[in-house]
Image (tube, rainbow, N blue to C red; front, side, top):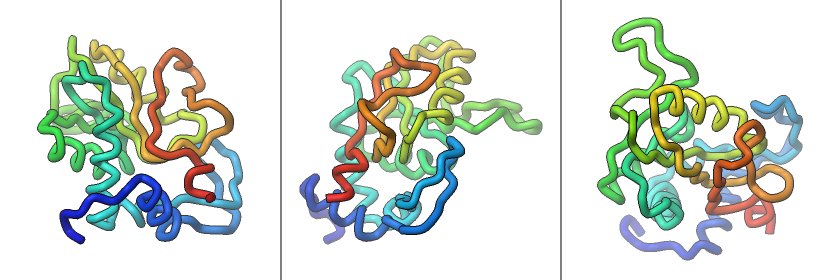
Amino acid sequence: MASGTISLSDLARQIAAISTMEGAFVLRSGQVSHRYFDKYRFEGTPVLLRSLARAMTDLLPAETEIIAGLELGGIPLVTAISIETGLPAAFVRKEAKTYGTCRAIEGQDIAGRKVTLIEDVITTGGAVADAHQLAANEGADVLAVVCAIWRGEGAPSIQGVPALPVLPVFTRADLER
């Protein structure tokens, strides 16, 4: 099982089984959801993380030079994708730290580089919009965001950055089957 490949339909079932929680959950967007996908449950399971990283790798724009994972859930994913692809990984903080390098994006110099953002679960994309702005401020050419799960309504898009392509492995509907 350690190195086997899981089909996308099996991966969706396994992610749903391990991560779906019922209750009342306040999302980053402020919305309340009665179904929640606890990303740390699948990101902390090596066979699922590896299979998900492979599926996300298939969605990366070909011209990607650097992949940049959003704090915190995008960090395990970007690390696994970096190992899978050999692409350098950057790590996007929610805001620049006030000590050390005082940077918002760590690990790589993204200025003038073609960057694909990596995120776990997106509903409205507030964190992605913030990361996009941070990357743009550092001179990156942000190509797209690849995410594990699009749980938002309608076609995947980021409020505030509607031209940014959103490339999900799964939608909420895929995990609710």
